Image (cartoon, rainbow, N blue to C red; front, side, top):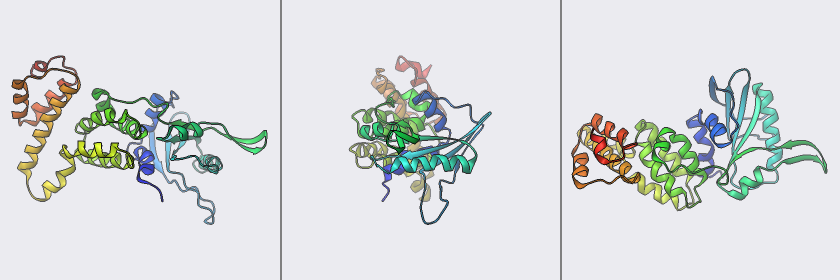
Length: 292
């Protein structure tokens, strides 16, 4: 049975299709031409119903002058038969979509990432007819994101780094900036991404940390509050959460916060003011600067 974290590792590219271009550029140093359009396409690569061939996620990247089909594979462990399947995926997807193929393997295991990155030779001993060499993102080559401003700039990429480093000690630092970063985007999108993150942390101690961080957030409970008609309570809850995020940003950045400043922030109930303070908190060198 396919695990939740296996699905999360590739589904993040379905939630944010533009992430594939940023991952190639920022994490692999292999920039592709500026995409005009990126679409999630059918990952069914069957020619015959007797043999099931299905990639994890397929993205059709339309750029000038070419277009590319990127096969995103979540790999949890080594598998001797996988290179043959990868060779099939690449050739069939290229023919099916008339596009240049690329294989991107994602793994949170260092050993699996290292194995995936090898040249997989298929054919006679010493005389291979096919050589498959995937592009691989794993804990050994993906930098962690622990800066709040950077996390706010690219929430999806931060989630990807958290899932890849799910078994590493650095994951706590990533999650601590990812949680407040989620509060800066649309609440419905944030809720979906928070659930995807929890699934991707399956089987690791970091999952408990993520649940604890999410318990303090507003967006997981918005739908329940609306169904009860507690609009006033919802607005108050949002304001309190926004105020906490302002203080959290300052504290995470090492900016001293006096009791007077803390009380002023927590007493504020105006969303526009809190949003303005949050933006200033990302760069302020003193707590008083957020009020200027």
